[in-house]
Length: 193
Image (cartoon, rainbow, N blue to C red; front, side):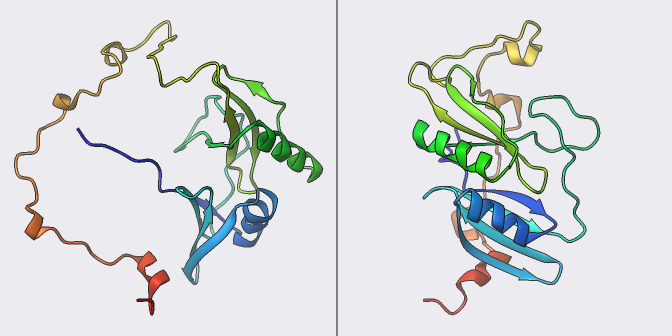
């Protein structure tokens, strides 16, 4: 079975990198750690934690996402609803809520979701952001819970995974034939040993 260690980065889009930097770096307090670019296409990275980054592509023709409430159905093309960023503790959570209020940035009241407490806000690109911190009473990962009164047949199969539902690998790439090609981000390290 394939194992994962976490999310390296989430890549989002902006029309205006300077406004995005002001919000993510200066208001939310995430360090701007690197960037590459050329006319009409820049990519900058912010440090969310020692293990996770948030990246933004600046595309001048991109428009902010239309405003919607997180978790509410939407019509038309959509790729995600919101991103949830976990805080280290409740004090940091409340400090961020106060900071958003002081900056006159819309933010919800604190919400008790059973295993986390959450607030929601929207960045200048229309990206819905949830900030949360875990509460000790429950951990949603410890026990499979399905409260959907009408789960699909696939859902009823349980938490899985069921790799046999996909074709098995018949001809894996031999180690001596594997190739890795240079990507755009490699430019960040040019001239370094």
